[in-house]
Image (cartoon, one colour):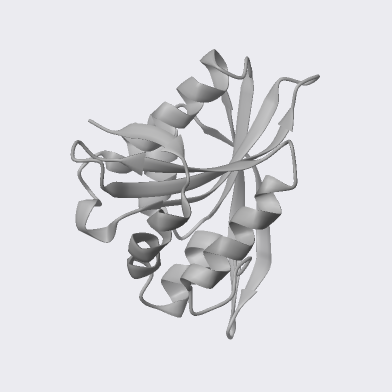
Length: 166
């Protein structure tokens, strides 16, 4: 069982260990943060998010209170009742065990029940099959494909836009 709570700076020490290579880092954050991932870069992100009313960072905790996942909620639009999820990551030691699906489901429940949202969006790289399957199980559906939209080294990655009705 997971619990979702606001991100705390003390979570960073664990989260930075979840990304060990540039490919995985880019697939996770689309290079929105600096590589290699550091506690300082997460602190910078936290401070940026605290200045804005429409976004926040969340940490998923396991039964013992240890961080098991992380995500951001952003672009909260209270007129359109819509929110965007991103930077979704699960501790690699816990992948394949349903933690991602549970964490995203908790985020959607929070968006619906606490924030009153009716729609959630996210973007995911087409080659990230595990994430695509997870998001589909949570009720997301593809709404568009941007082909060759993200340069990564000598490659161009395709990216899906996805939406869930809450």
